[in-house]
Amino acid sequence: MPNLPTIKPLDWSDPVNLKAYSWCLDHGITIGMLAASQGYANRHWTIEITIDKKKIKSPKEYGPDELYSKVFELYKFYYNKYKDE
Image (cartoon, rainbow, N blue to C red; front, side, top):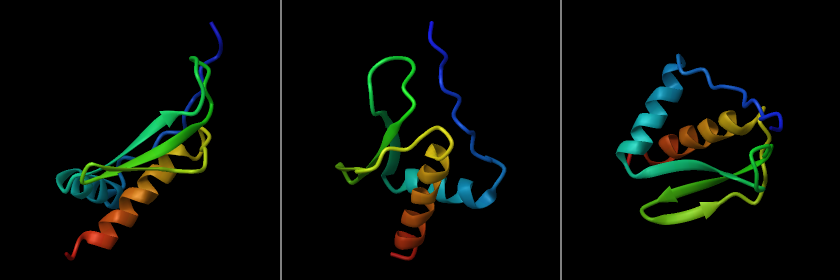
């Protein structure tokens, strides 16, 4: 079996990450990761954002060291953009 990639974990103790993540889920904004290639040894992912059933896929691929930080950067972006509406 090939070596599986290790994804750098996110710091879940950061209250800003938790607040933005929770707010987005409560308001129908989800962000997921899609494998950029087939197989178990995939080392790159694209990001898919869903807002009100509309899907937006990132043009860029992200590696295991930047994936979760980018996902939560996006959660914080959407939280800051829409929280006051």
